[in-house]
Length: 221
Image 1 (cartoon, one colour):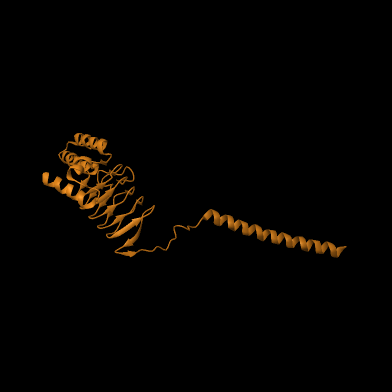
Image 2 (image 1 turned 90 degrees about the vertical axis):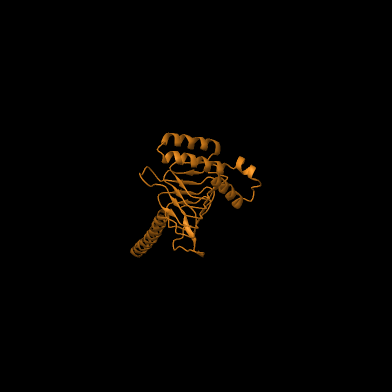
């Protein structure tokens, strides 16, 4: 337990340049406290003490602002930076050396049973405010951009941004998409334009009929 706690502290120093001393990290880093609290609640959960595990989880949430369900599985080297508002669901699985920033949700999409939360691979970075929703995998060495909403599987070595999240870089190469998400087709506007064209055509035909009528009347007189 003590060696694991030392490893957790070392992770903070490796990934946060603002960390100054072990004393400061132990006393003030809420992400570290949340991870330690989860270790206790997870052991209680695995032992079948579900209610007690949830109590420990909620107490940890009260003090840290980070909610990790006792059933979630977390690997080594997790770093939660400025973790206020982070939510990690019951069936979520997190690999090794993952970094999560504030406001991140690793959640489900509804009331489905069984595995309903994401599986996060190793060496993944999930930036501020990102929402990863559903039972799929975020591949190793991937990055989720700030504010992104990810609803489908992400291959390894990918960078995902946007709402909904789309792969922009994979294996170091920029990914292009045929569909222009800025200039999407507007069926209502297309219908209005079609009606305008029909009206203009009808106006021309009416004008021609009036001219023919006027010519016929003039020839009669």
